[in-house]
Length: 100
Image (cartoon, rainbow, N blue to C red; front, side, top):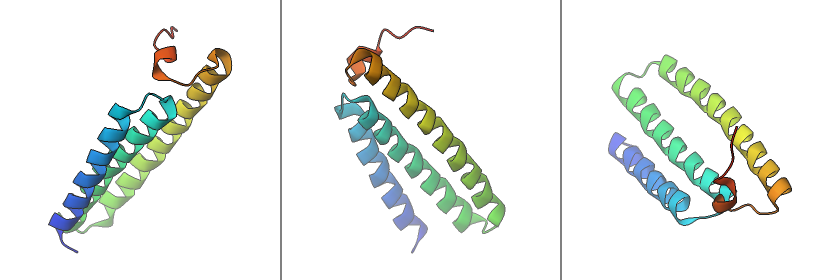
């Protein structure tokens, strides 16, 4: 597998995630689109690191970023669940007036 192939797959994943984030109104689906987009960026970064300097320290850093992103998405899903419980709706329109 070449670098160009991996970057092409990452670009396709990013495009699918962008379409999913823009076209949906449900908060969870928007977050899933964002998750796919971030995973595409991580795939591209890992491929660049592997093909340019095959040192495992880059992959370890990407795994740490992936773990932090997982915690962030879990927090976002918790907020989406609370919005659904209190508002009875899970669309992005019902979450626009949230205030600290």
